[in-house]
Image 1 (cartoon, rainbow, N blue to C red):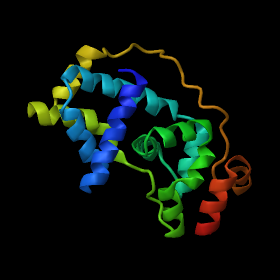
Image 2: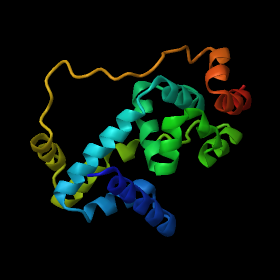
Image 3: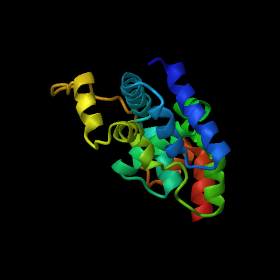
Length: 189
């Protein structure tokens, strides 16, 4: 699946969600259920690629600021939430994670002293939920995925996450993500 088709699916689900008032993840699963099984697998593959592209220290630091902390699992959910925000926010985040200080959900959460903006766990499982709904089997996606993308052997390429730094050091956070640090550290101090 090419990148444009992937983002068309995301944007269509966002539009459906806004029109119906249903949660984005439900609209996404509904949308995927209208696709052939092969396309759902291709969607899952592209999702993994765009999800992995956000696996960087600077993006994690943004999640840490927005969430008032961020574990490994929470970082997976945060990256899914950035994807669910659509292509524009995704591309802005890839270029400059500090731009999330302008994201309406982040601004609203900061003013409400909430740490839940952009953490969207169930988006990670949309493809498997679509398979389950189509087949009635909770294992259908795993079986199809194993045939589509066999497990790679050990020694895969290590991800370059960029420069690691101390998320608990306010000076570093203000220097590296100044807008988010101003918004999140000041509001929650």
